[in-house]
Length: 442
Image (cartoon, rainbow, N blue to C red; front, top):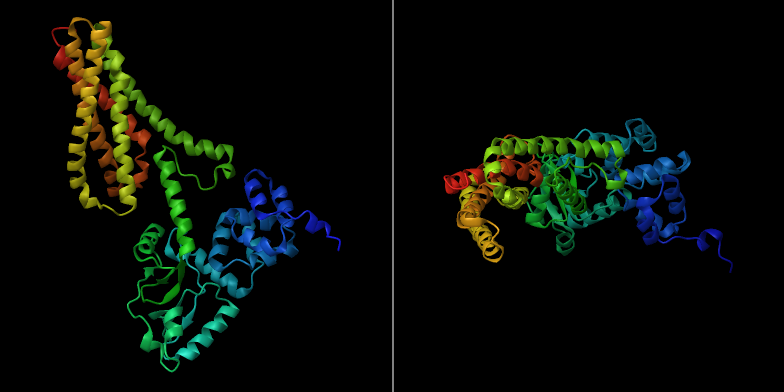
């Protein structure tokens, strides 16, 4: 039997996925057409919404409908939000009226709310059904439109949620029993306007495969599934990491962000940090006289301010993550402040001793600091204690302040905290120098 040209040139999904990021749109389409038919569907469903949109729009209009209708409503809503506004009609026009209405309902919700994440197609039964009737009804729903059947949700005539049944409970129940007799009535739900981070926390607390979304009247609107939450967790973690790095969060993969968009995302924070560092130059100018009289002090400026910045970056990273995981709340700021004060004191003491010993060792070996080496060592040691304490306190409190005024705590980026501590570190350092070296070097 002679193989067809298409089967001879068939491409494996792994090969295409590995090369996908560096391929042009035309090359992606060509590679996608070479995939075996048996795996093309799974490959398509594994793409991001942006990549799915690009691929569909590169297809001839006659082929678009097949791939658009492969997606459930929640994924279609994500796809519509990922494409350009002028391309939306090209997507929605491929849907039947019922699917188009479902997608439009989802688009009315904020993208980061439970309503924007949910799938409006879910398995439902009535409380007065017998178990056999419920199983038959679920089988019919699975054939017609419901793709995800983790649980069967029990709704009354007004679509209010009454209870839930797992498939295991359903099949284990006696056939003549009613759904109302075996359903679980205390159902954990999320409101349709619940933020996606709160939804992900609820999932982690209860280990569900799916969770019902309800409105204020407890009418069930859809379900959020665990695969949606995996995407949310990855998205939120990526956003926080990018913000902690001292930039605006990217809205797309690295290679999908244009050059000008990348500049805009990064230049703003760099400018803010640059202006902040100008205060450091101003502070050094203020202590110009002291530096001129004791040039040796300038040798330790990078050591002092970097130690404060590093301690502040550690603290702010710990607090940002703890706030994101709800390990602490705003009212815990005082407990955190006391803990970081003692931590900063201990860390500063360790670094201070090391700094003092370093000065004394260099003096003993190389006579680097003259007759006042001991006082210089004390200046460095005490400055390190003060700077590290200030760094840990400011780094830990800044996320609380930002959360309190309504900003994302991740905006308290490590570079921002380091810049803040640079200025204060100089003040602490030269104040300590004035205290120990007045009447000698100063």
